[in-house]
Image (cartoon, rainbow, N blue to C red; front, side, top):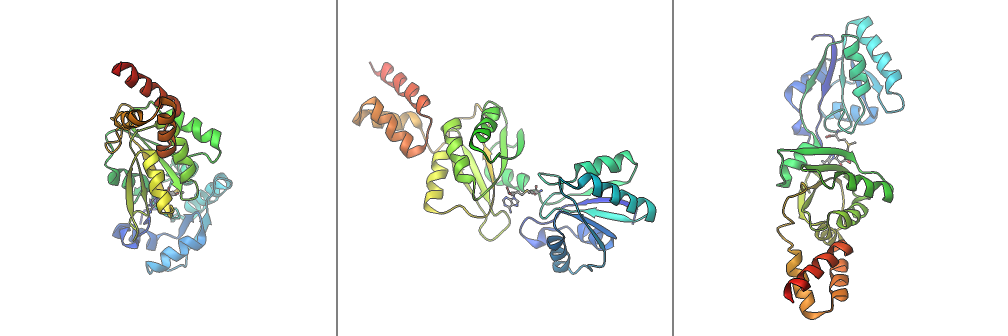
Length: 279
Ligand code: SAM
């Protein structure tokens, strides 16, 4: 096996999703660079691969230092190493790019063994446009920063993809409802696992779905491109007309804000237009 660094994708849920070539490489390398040695060792054991190797952790805080160590190991001993993540494709919202940059600068052979990547699987499941997409990593944790992140991508003509966690998805969808209104979005969760599902709808509809069934597992949030039609399942003008037939403007808007978490100002503007048109 050629000396160098092998970037190896690992499964995101289903062990059988690892490629035969990836297994061969993980068997053959002398060093494994990983995020968590316990998770890496568990994977190797499940694949029936010997643990008689050097394991080196790679995190944001130690990446430069451990990259230097790994490169020394490769150079001095003419050996090969694999870079893996806890799950999925290394380097995608996972550590590694500083190591790769250093290896390339030092003329170390670097190659990639492709495989599972949560963002690609999620896009494939979503039914949203895939010809142009923007992967925006994890959403910030704080309310203000999260809203700013949404505002930044609001007018982009591409499907926008975020990694998300079950504990934060409700807050994210509440903020998304305010900013994206009736834009179609999708949440893909537990991909390749037993409870895999992909839910599509407006942020309000997704919130309603998660009110009935608590969000669980790993998830990816995707937002349809700006300029796409509103969610096919929710025609906001029809809803507004129904409400305006029964209530005054203020109550009609209030009811829809409460029911679908839509943006109040946007609803007012639409409601006024409907009223003007009808007069
Ligand atoms: N590098 C990995 C990849 O791209 O496949 C992703 C690592 S990132 C630290 C972990 C995030 O990926 C999770 O919070 C979730 O958003 C997403 N993810 C990973 N596995 C998933 C799965 N089976 N289903 C849905 N999302 C998943």
